[in-house]
Length: 195
Image (cartoon, rainbow, N blue to C red; front, side, top):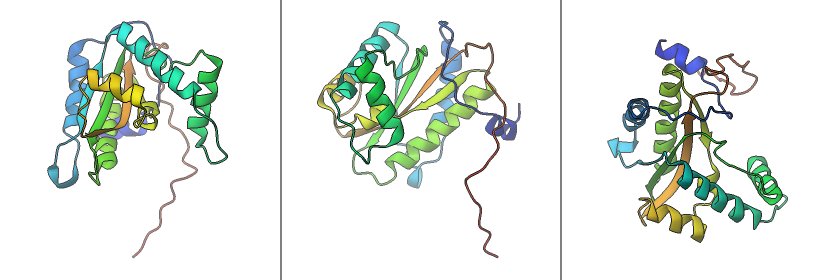
């Protein structure tokens, strides 16, 4: 699969087999993320990799409990609203049961923290597609970045106090044996030519 095909056919996967991903594939995906562009080549994106199922379930319970405490306001972003509502029902697993969660973090106060991490996450999703793995961008830990309980847990797993959680990626073998690669029609993302 060439790079252009890997980009155009990348889709989010939200249902995974209960199969571990070989470390060599996780490392390839991480390498793609580590080679993403960064502002002034700062290379400050920190990757925290979870592959332990018990730890993932513990984190999922923590995220569910912390979201369940939140109130929905009129301006609450729709995806965050969905996470809060699902958490209040008690059956919410934010990482969709994937065997791998890669959390990205970057320096607090660094103006390109989100942009650098977004480039890394996109590179990793494209690499996962090329490796016949499913992936999906995960925002829940970013939304809970200032939550004391979540930060405490993440500190114990390698997050530094001078870092902000910028995003996450789940990774695994799709339940359907291969990623959905049906290209979606583009109805948005307008282009304006200035010639």
